Amino acid sequence: MFRLALALLLAMVPFGAGANQLSVWPNGSDEGQCEPDSPCATIGRACSVANSSADRETSIAVTGGVYRHNTSCNIRYHRVVVISADCNNRPDIVLLGNDIAFYAEDSAILAVNCVDIRSSGNRSIAFASRQFAIMDVANVRIGQLTDGTVMSAQEMSKINCISGIALYGSLRYIAQASGMSTVNLNCAVSFENTPQINAITTAVQKSLILASDASWAGAFIGEKYICIDSQIDGATTMPGTDSASVNNCLAR
Image (tube, rainbow, N blue to C red; front, side, top):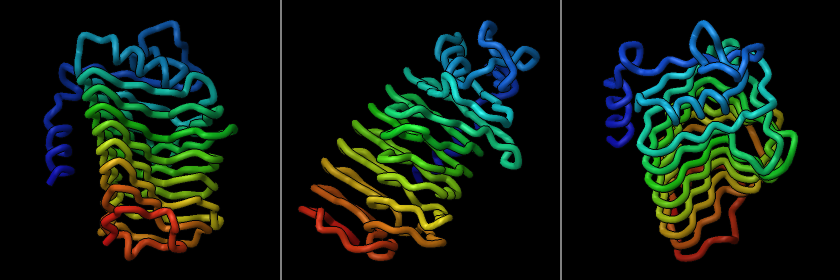
């Protein structure tokens, strides 16, 4: 029901009418305002323009290519932003380490579709949320995130996996929830090249992982979950080895 309500909300946002329409292209220029006929060169610049716009709703179209600089997108303060790309020509987002590709905070709503994310460094996060923000993730491919995380929800926020996640590189966690947050992992998850993953999910501080309707394809090396003072739905059908890091956990 929560995901349906969010989908209806995004459908009602008047993108294409009064909303900002921004564009990003690897050969663009960050000196402008990311307009469709004068695209920016970096995703970070487009998100900065969205945050400073008088419009609360923004759509950002990202052209395929490699993005290595200013890749972090931070959306905040009640804004609604949809970032989309061509699934047949995905943007290849390369993080540097200790950074976040897409970050929603302070009651923002952020949807991201059809991107490829990997990191050349350590402890990168693909999608993160905090402080009542909501994020929807769809049709993404995740490469190497050494000691990093795909989805990390903190401080009473929520991240929804709307459709497939393909994992072809090693990482620490797929879904991480803390501080009374929720990660909805009820989507198709596939593993390629048998990646090493510390644990599929980790939930702490009265948080919730929803994965009872998730589907799993391929193989990986690692544990099912880590759970402390939290709840994980779908824990019994998760692949992976059992974890010893469980305390006061409802895993079903």
